[in-house]
Image (cartoon, rainbow, N blue to C red; front, side):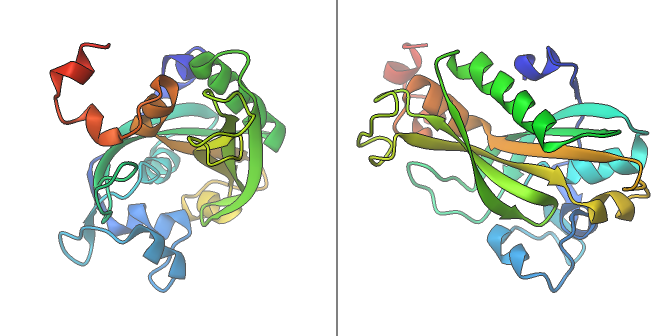
Length: 222
């Protein structure tokens, strides 16, 4: 987060118990959208849900703040995931969100390159791969070169030399217009990452469960 604040971002938050409207509909995911299945979730009732990502903060920012703004939005999220070495039904996510005049994909790439170098070091390389997210278009996954084999290919990176760290993209005009922002005047970008995943990659932790089990043999290393 400090790396983003150094680039002019400010912290913005929202509730963990969220309206379905903010968690899905205002992010270009109407009731019948098949992409909702990607984030099967914990419902309180038909209208209220434990948020599945920090992206509802985007909708809340668009409804309550006047652009331009640069926001970093950390918080806990909930998904129906089986617990294993790389998944948990409860985890921390951090999202970046920028809306301003004439924002382009180059701004997104420059921001993420700066962030990655601040976290992992100047010798780490980044790679953008086309992907899909309902609330961004175009969308991408971002990889970093493996810190163990330095891009040569090893067991940790499954021989590819790369490790996925986050998803990102340009804000879909529908998301802006649904919150009363004119997409002809403003554009923006968003990116989101799992905090535990970033920590595991930075410190070469093989199982994210080690971060929450409280084993002193592990914790004393930090």
